[in-house]
Length: 358
Length: 116
Image 1 (cartoon, chains in turn blue, orange):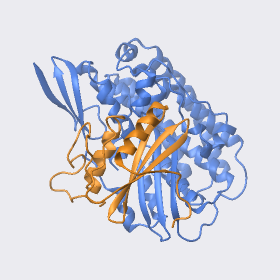
Image 2 (tube, helix red, strand yellow; image 1 turned 180 degrees about the vertical axis):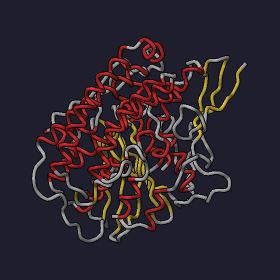
Image 3 (cartoon, chains in turn green, blue; image 1 turned 135 degrees about the vertical axis):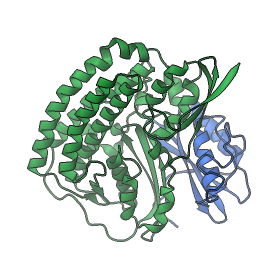
């Protein structure tokens, strides 16, 4: 006999509201149907009343975790419309803040994930370590959550010597803390018992399901937009994509743990190569034409489409966020697993519902 | 005319879209997203597919009243974006794998087709 039960929209392991209707045979899931719409804000419609510069602030407010990268991607898309090159220093500043964004996002996720299987002390540790990153972001950008580092034409704030010293000092501390976390997330008996072999997605399935980011790379697919031409600065910084091949919850966790080291390395390299000079190019006029810009957010590829018609307001802004791409994979991975494991599986796509619904 | 547009292959019919999407999948492309634009009295759909960081875009004009075919039978992940455009633009996709019937985001009391 089958039973249908709701998972969410309010659930202890869900930081944001999303609902899954789970069809169960005893305690085994045989079907799942996602239900959205709890935080849909219609931000793509909001551009009707905001000009293309003001829209930067809207994009940053799509999500409180990857706000910097939303702003960066949007401004890069509009810069494509203007066909303008921004100063190199601005690109480096964007990379530094973007990677700091990724570090605090992954630490946040690791904490939520630990909380998902009841490892409360690990949750506390992850979030405690994350605080140091947020403190530095507040000092260099003026805000813990909405950093507003990017504007059309470059960076909105410069990094001073004092900022750089703060970042480097914090990275030394956080790197050593991540090593401690790694020991637990990679080797701990409880973590492995709850994640190894769970909700396995093959390389082909993950690719065809349209997944992105650590969810895709955790299935052995080498895909990270930081290797893409629009972000060629990453090549100079020695970026190497983190890929794990087993495709299970453990594998997706490993990708995020090891990406922390990669981000720390990138920030250090970016600081060591940070060029002098201007941080922005003046932009005049109104955008015209259409452009697609993609970057790698903490949760994976984000796609921005912008269309300008020669007025201050964009005609169309379309944003495809990483979680939007990862949610359909749950339809494929949840069937066959036990109800008690549903929170673990859902969390391993690192769901961001504010992003998804915009 | 817009000066800088994205490279896209023009599709003549919804059946052509299905075939091109199937061919792209067979050729190793990943479904990235679909963009919907208002155009004249209808809508323009841009299917965005990715392979090795390179995009292939398919552009198709949906005539007023036309029901484009869903590609969710080829790429299951297309179901969310197609349902989104049913909500926001009032389009109807034929053959959707899961059809929320205009209520992916919107409740019965929400504004109807707010981007249309």
